[in-house]
Image (tube, rainbow, N blue to C red; front, side):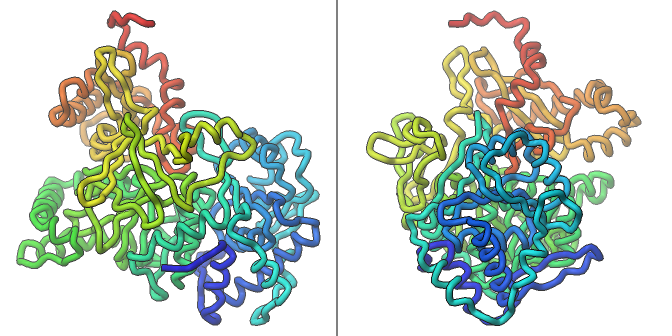
Length: 594
C-alpha cells in the first residue's frame, strides 16, 4: 500500500529509484526505445516551465488530445506539478465533440499528438479561451508549438528545487483533472477529480496484486479513460515499465515484442482473443476437437486455477502442451497477471479463460469513483464477481437494488453542471452509481446491470440485458449484441457479427462474402444466428428469452459511434440507429401505450 497524498507523489516515487527505465516507446523503424526516470523528470520539468512561461497557473485547464505515448505522460505530469488541471480527450472524438469539451472546460492550452488531431482542432469551431497549441509530431502546423521544442531545455540527472517546491505545494483538495464521460446515456459530463480522489484510490487498488520492478505492461487502453490512467499511475509507483502502444491494431505486434508480464484490458479485448482462438480451431475438425477436449480438461481443474495453483496430472500436461501455451502466447507468453475492467466481463468469458489456465482479476468502478470501487486479487478472488470493495470505499444498496458508495475517491461534482451533481448524490451524500448489484456473505460484489438499461416488458417483468448479451458474445460469430424490448411483450435482439469469423464460416459454406448487406440476409447465415440465440435461450427464463433476431450489416465500433472508448455498448445510439428494425420486431404486436 502507498501513502500518496497527491498525484505529484507519483513522480516522486518514479524518480526515487535512480535512473531505471520506466517507459518504452516505438520509433518509426519499429525499435523499442527506453526512457529512464532521470530523462522523464527532466522532460516533465521542461514542459512545466514552458507552460508556466505561457502564463498557465494553478487551476488553469490544459487539454490533451492524443493517443497513448510517452509525451502524454510527460504533459500530464507537468500539468499536475503546476497545480493546473488537465482535460484528457479521446483521440476518436469528432471535431464537434472536441470543440464542445474545449469550450466547456475553458482550456487555455491544447496539446495534440498529430496532424490528424490538429486538423480536428481547426474544425472544432470558435475556441475563445484557447491561447496555445502544441503538437507532438514534427511538421509545419500554423500557430502551433513543437513538443520537441518544449523539451529542448530538458536536463538529465539534475534536480530542480523550484519545480519540486511547486509540485509539493499542491494539496489533495486541488482539482487534478476533468474527465468527460463517454456519454452512453446522454450528453457528456466533465467529472471533476481532485488529487486526493485519485491518490486515495491508487493507495489501495493494487496493494494485494503484487506488482514489482520486474514487471512490464503495455499501455494501450486510452489514457483519456480513467481506468488506463489509474493503472499507469499505479504501475509507475510499483516501479514497473510502461510500454506505450498508440493504436489497437499495433497491439499484437507489441505483445510479441514487449512480452508483458501484466495485461490490463476491457472485456471486449479478452472476447476478441477468445474468438480468434476459436476461429482458428474452427477451420479444422481435428483442431476443434482438441480445443474442446483441452477446455474440458481445464474445466475439471478450474477450482485449482482460480486459487492460483497450477494443476497436475497427465491430462492437464497434455492440454498445456497442445493448446494452453498457444493461448498464453497471444498475450506475449510471459503475462502472469490478467486484469479486466471498464465493463462486465461475463461468466462465459471468465470461465473459458479459467479453463485455459488463465485467472482474470475483474474489477469495477466508475469515472466518478477515481475509478476502482472493488477488485478481485490473488488472495481474494471469486469468479463472476468484481471482488471485494477497497478498504476505503463503502457500499450500500437502495431499495431498488442500486449500489451507492462513499469514500475519499468519490468525485466532487460535474464541471459546470450543479443540477447533475445534485442528482448524482443521495440526500445524505452517497454517490448513486446507477448500477444494480448484490454483495454475498463473504463480501464479494456482483454487478447485475445498469439501472437505466433494465428492460421492463409490458407484462411487468424486468430483464437485465448485459448478462444475456455476454452469453451471445461468447460465440465466435457474434461481435456484439443489443437486447431490446422495453415496454413490449417480449425481448428481441440485434446482432452485429464478428465479420472476420463470419466470412470464414460463410466461405466454407460456399456463400459470397463480398457484400455484407447481402451476407447477413442469406438464409444459411440467418439460420446460424437463430441457432446461437436458441442455444442461449435454453438457459434463460421464459420471459427473458429472445423471440426474434436481426443480424445487421455493420460491425459496431468506437469509430462507428455505437461503442464507447472502453467498448461498452451505446444502447441509446443503437436503438436510434436501428429504430426501423426494432419497429419491425413488434409490427404485429398490439401494445397499449400510456
